Figure (cartoon, rainbow, N blue to C red):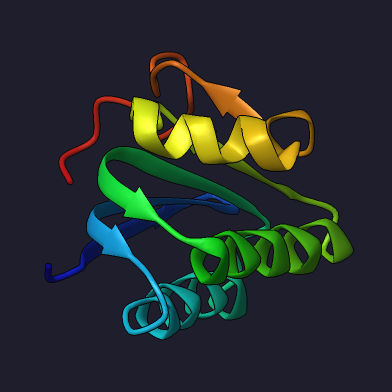
Length: 115
């Protein structure tokens, strides 16, 4: 399955919306988008996972790497609405305790902005 990624930035925040499957083949695309957002000045990354069907360990490593880079800039990385299959992977690996996970983007600075 193809991976589609869109992003928008505002005042040090980047909302990255991901759709499809994150795996060995598509993870580099996500990595590039997240690093690009950080290089463009974002410190806080908000990753909308509500349309991600699958995420393997390669994808989790990309998210962890981006979180580390974001924290080095004084920011953080948050996951929005991971689907049950992705949430299960987060729980089994213990990463649900590492990432900030929100049910929705409501109340976040970029919430309600066109994607």
